[in-house]
Length: 256
Image (cartoon, rainbow, N blue to C red):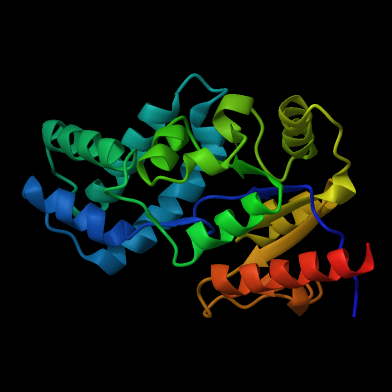
């Protein structure tokens, strides 16, 4: 069995890792308030394809193209609803977009996964610095506050504010810099661990920065390529992650 290094810094992705959302439900409900009835399955496909296209045209939520994150999301909402209502008025689209943008800044649209608080409690009690590294816009601070988990983290590092996104080496280096400011002592990459739900951005991004990394996949539908991520680094939920860390800290205590 490989002996795991006891981490001094653990960072988390947010969407799909700490927090979940019922996207189709919120989009359908808010659209219905303005007379726009949409099919949830078509919505999910439309959201994914339009998100990918817009992210390619205006990376990091329009951070460097002058669009800005609010207009980025407004355009995405417009595209998603116009896919099913091509003749909808601009006024109705603006109202739907404003409502969704507001909702997604609060706990109305976000919820912690089961076991997240217990996992964060455990790590904090082990004197581990906790942080967030997320490809997200400026709403993340208010979201974490509203879902009552912001106080666990020494820093919240978003791609929008930093100007670079995962899997860029620079955003992981920035997390180490912020940790040094918080801790008043240097933490090396091998003492850092990142946890997220995407192979390329989170797992391989952290590994390329010489960090340790773990992958969490709340959905069993997602198949993981074991050539990229060994199965011992993949966890189904926060409870499994906590059990893993309990063993890591117990092992290190016994051999120290």
